[in-house]
Image 1 (spheres, rainbow, N blue to C red):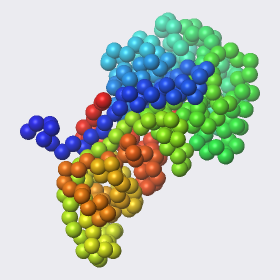
Image 2 (image 1 turned 90 degrees about the vertical axis):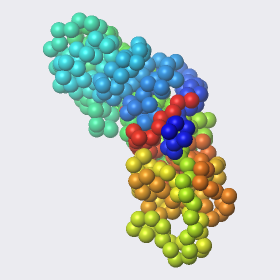
Image 3 (image 1 turned 135 degrees about the horizontal axis):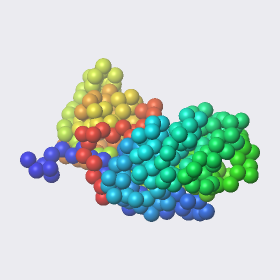
Length: 362
Ligand SMILES: *Cc1c(COP(=O)(O)O)cnc(C)c1O
């Protein structure tokens, strides 16, 4: 059987949209260099094709050594920052060999660098914890950590200075301004380029812009703000998650649809069965009423999402038939909107598209 004859459950990645979104980042943060965050398989979009489309960014950021190695194996020789740094001597040796930039966020990592005999110059990014309480030195520890880092032979001078915002997607939370103040106060007088803003910081907090911006989500055309979508900021969705209708059936009033019989027809209904389910990464938690696009028109999801299928009430779309294209999110249906029906954030949805889905790059 040829590929064309198969049912296509596809995640289509639009390279032109990635390039457009990178240009939007540059327009919104004109004086910043862009550290394109492509961890977690580029938020589920595919690490290597996304890196290729975003090759014009100033550097890449990934979470882990393994992700950086995939980039090097694919031939990328750009700067790559490992956002979690390294923990073991073998990892440090590999990071040096590959020329990776390292986040330094703990005294254990400082000790690792101090005890290392490697001489290849290493670029370090020192992380200050301004309130996220995840990675980084506490403000009262920062000066000492900074002095120790700068005393290590081979560390390129001066190290970059970093913090991460905990709640920048809530424009009304005073926490962000407090974090920015703490960062400015703690690093006052320290030389070195700063990096503060994630996507929410770039979009909503002009004061968070610094030498290096670290956009992730917005590069994929998605925004973290409740009730808004990428289009509101001139961004284009990158991922289109698609399948097709494989059956249409009639349901009588009072009859239920799907597992647990959570939805019952209140009128004679036509139900389209779409070939996609939680086994493909469409969240099972998605509530009845969530929009689905069938040939570009919206219809509501009804009943429980199954592993390989979901059901859509197309009573009001009488022309729907097997073979029609179904879009779960993407062009015309923001993943931000679907995420709300799933009780999730858009990051989870794009990251969750599973291996068995055909990944296509255009
Ligand atoms: C993931 C990550 C980012 C990108 O965040 P977005 O909200 O996707 O823009 C930036 N900085 C750090 C440290 C991260 O872990």
